[in-house]
Amino acid sequence: MKIAIVGAGLTGLRCAMELKEFVKLKVFEKNSVGGLVSSFCNGYCIEKFYHHAFRTDEELLNLIKKLGLGSKLVWKTVKVGFAKDGKIYSLSTPLEILRYPYMSIFDKFKLAMFTIRSRKKKFEEFDDIEALKALKEELGEKLLENFFIPMLNAKFGENSKQVSYAWLLARVAIRSNRKLKGEEIGYLRHGFHQMVERMCDEVEIVREGAKIKRNGKWNVNGEDFDAVVFTAPLPELGELLNKFNFPEIRYQSSVCALLSLKKSLSDVYWINVDKANFGAIIEHTNFMPFEDYGENLVYLASYTTPESNFFRLRDEEIERLFLKDLEKFGVKSEDVNWIRIFKAKFSSPIYEKGFLKKITPYKVSDGFYVAGMTSKPNYPERSMNGSLTAGKEVAEQIKRDLGL
Image (cartoon, rainbow, N blue to C red; front, side, top):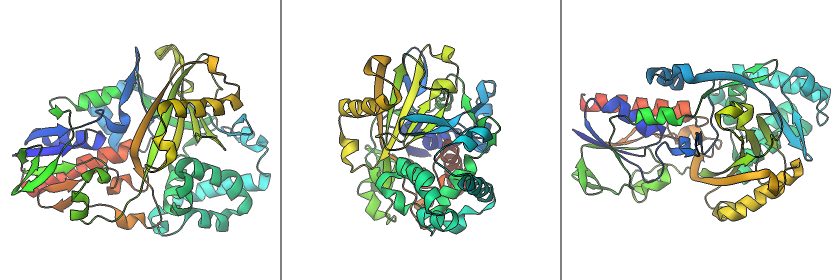
């Protein structure tokens, strides 16, 4: 029995882990192994796009233990904040939130109550409702304008008006694991590349794109297989996308800069930014020890669409725009040791209202399976945990279907 897996991201690798004892496998990957969790190495390794774990990430945490990396998983309480008019405000403690000048005491109270209520709601029930419309009705115009619109614009850009309330409720619930001094998150010290490398053990990875055809059996790059598991973004299916009659799913793109700075920007880990070419500043070395890297490492995260002019800019142009915006925070070009730009054309679906109806089943045809960002475990937001769960679940279905 031969199975081809297209895509060596977390979903593809997790699927391979489950199937490798039962079948002959080949995993095809034209880009970096690990997908969005692939790493940049510079005497140390760090993810090209920022990552961290949550206490609720059951599949991710179990896998880390299974791979013998449990002792490297660390949990820390980090500061989060907001940048407005060139100034960074930590919003990590109750006192800091009370002092924040761009929100009234009454709005702060409403926001706190909204966070508590969000944890109790079944977000699937709000899939057909626009987030902005629901927030305006529940919290009012002022809180919407001052807090939520900048956050949604930073995450979804011009598509923020279409985002479902289900996405926002789940986002608030996931990110509200707050302690008195900030938010608790986890990380695999020295990088998630360690997890990716162990997932690759005893798995044959072919470093090339996959051309899929059907000629009785499924054929990938001229070789016949009994089944194919497609874990790459759906637009990369090419002509097969229309054959399977998938609903239209729009994607967003990620443009992420990783910088080394001569001095720390602040003591805040995650900073949402208003009115800049990047929507968030993530200072990684306010999370993991400076000594692990020997330099201050900062991500600048921007979200756009594959069709946007911004995504098509050359790396040098994006660097110039990002560094210009950093000047608002007192960072000059001479303060930057180096900068690298990383892009992901299809980094996530846009979770529009009604997205629940667009979730793809694992089995779409005899011998052809799809798993990844559009699978149920990644609703209403894709994550490492959701991608791993999708890989495990599609493998379980294949084993049932093929009697393995």
